[in-house]
Image 1 (cartoon, one colour):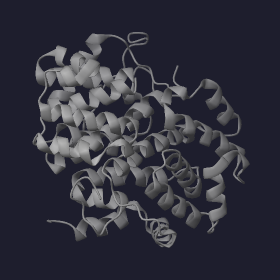
Image 2 (cartoon, chains in turn blue, red):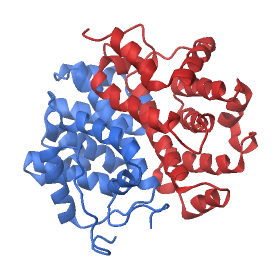
Image 3 (cartoon, helix red, strand yellow):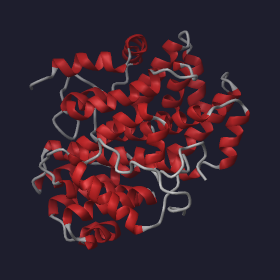
Image 4 (tube, one colour):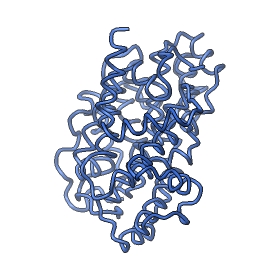
Length: 190
Length: 189
């Protein structure tokens, strides 16, 4: 049960977005720029950062939806699982491993990021913009995750719902809602 | 020393914002709606929530500037701001705001810590659904802003007078307006 009277039939963050469109707009725009707009990190790589941070924050809705978006971009669901379990041994580039290390520190506390962490990422080819965006993606998911959990939103378990959502996010980004119609009562219950 | 090449004349989040205007715009738009937009919580109350969360996250720049903005909204009452940071239960704020600060403090740690009882307690003291929503989102958003400022290793000056003056300015003109200046001054670099 959500803590406040959120619109029924909307899972996770979409309930918060429908409840308060004024704050939804900049939150959608931020996610769109960070995760979807062209960048030297691929959308799949950026979704992996979002999925790792959401997993570390133990936010089911966010890790499942961004994991699904990453899978849709990468075409291989095992990568997401490996990144969440132990990114150091996952099949991603050395640069991504360094960036995921920075993201993991930001998830705990931004002050944990050291000059050595940043140097290591740079040695693997990371640019200043990539380091900036990694820090901000990790920080932003510390917001989205707390928002989704702090309102007590409904977070369905059905993997098929997340697969469809991930496909929509991967194709269309974040400016437009991926869920336009509320689900029938009970269809997405916990 | 910042971890990346941020403009050296802009401390805290402003350097990061000028570095990447594409993300600065939605970041400023969000804080503008949350802290200055129409609300039944006063601007001073909302800035106190932002200050409290930033203080819990130990982000010097954010708790200093939002503390200064809060004081500017609260008739210059810096002692009240300090008391909220130190122990809000003893502060001279409404029981409703204390209940909302309790929720904000839980969101700062983990959103899942917020209980039905916390929300009921706030509601009994007159908090509306929108006020509870905005409290959760202000707390969540400052967990982002704080990590952004700290994670890039931005310059965070100690000089209280600097924050006091800037705080008055932001309290008067709002976030988007003041951001247009530093974004414009660094455009195209």
